[in-house]
Length: 256
Image 1 (cartoon, rainbow, N blue to C red):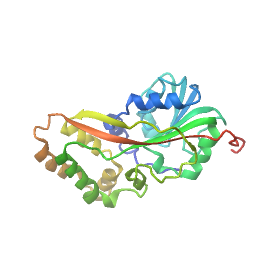
Image 2 (cartoon, helix red, strand yellow):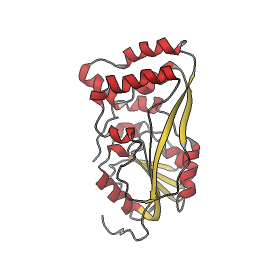
Image 3 (cartoon, one colour):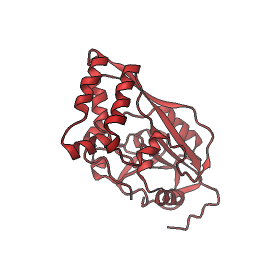
Image 4 (cartoon, rainbow, N blue to C red):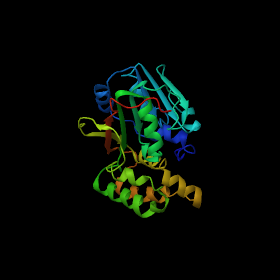
């Protein structure tokens, strides 16, 4: 069972986490073998589930956190459920697509992959992606990098290493899909937008819980010195790292 790092900040997660580019969902739909059912695992508040519904007749979106599900955006084609990544409750060989957005690094890989292989149709597509550390103007990058490494290093869970690696080297037992184009999230944000987002980081929440001090307060002062007018907008970019592959045609679906 994967750890729950986000229930505490579920309302802020829903408000302040960035959404993914439509081009990513179009690519997934183009490379899935069908468009009947997608399972979005670790769905949070539905940031991937709802866009998937534009391409799939039905989306089952699951998360271990009931608090996250409570914040999810309703959609008539999305069925939200509280469930672990290793026990979806879906029938065997039922899914054209399994997606994991910004969450697979928290999972027990062996248990999740066994469930993903069970529910995927032969030739079904599994895709997992993460966005990397945000990028902005050089002075902003320097402050974010210092905060990420120097301030938060003791508070990052060990699974974070997979994000830092862009999922390279991560176990992924599927036949590789065709190479995808480069995807990125691009937003125009004020300083408050940026700080609200950083406040949802699991390391920030762990630091706050352990010390009683919000580390983003000092970050705000340092960023203010390089941002200028805090109401002015700056472009913030998150490069996306994607792993995608197909279930084998001879996958044994009889194993529960």
